[in-house]
Length: 126
Image (cartoon, helix red, strand yellow):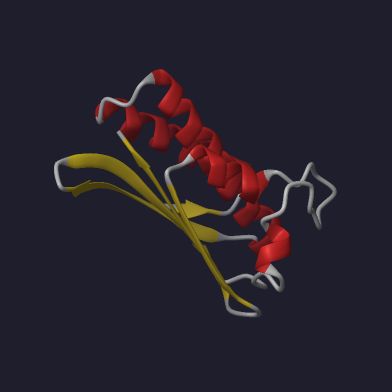
């Protein structure tokens, strides 16, 4: 799905909640996934203007989960290590978007190249 506005962020949240509920995630785990989705989708709008979210069910050795990929063609992240620190912000926010999202999921992968864009992949296991 395309994320290019606050309405896109809302739609991403709703889609994540629906998938998580259908897969039988607890209300707490649904909330964690929706919160991570909100933060990562908001980052797309804030820093790149537009991007995509892809959501899928994953299964590994009888474990089921939800994987969500956020990708954009924006400016990229110059210092990933610093960007992952609590409190670091370039937008005047609280600086908890990336680091907070990482804490809400079981698996977190961030790949970014300056002037090429960013891809964040998160997975939450049931």
